[in-house]
Length: 167
Image (cartoon, rainbow, N blue to C red; front, side, top):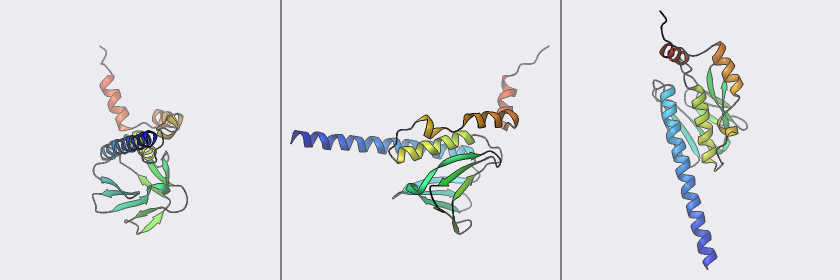
């Protein structure tokens, strides 16, 4: 009886920790998405394993979370790409069809690495996986080279604020 009670308490605590971690990651993801482009994206909801991302123009995308692979960065398009494991798991109300990817874009490309990382952390937390460097960050060499040679407005702003005039 004592072992059963201990097992039940352990399972309950594990479930509570999972729920808090996933909710924390979801809240971080929502904030990051709105910071990425608050003129396009509105909210993210999760219900019954369905991810719904709403946009200000009343359009949305939905996908079963268990069918989502991860997010990555398309350097050529300067977008964060949500990818399916197999097939066309993402429904877009904008196109009225299912697709294998969805591109998150902003005019500046600002915080694309952060959005990608937060999305992958959320997916890992939702799946009950430990958040690691491998599932939260990608190929930093690509990001470094892209930012070094192409850069972003954010980089220019930071450079302006850290330089001091010489006389």
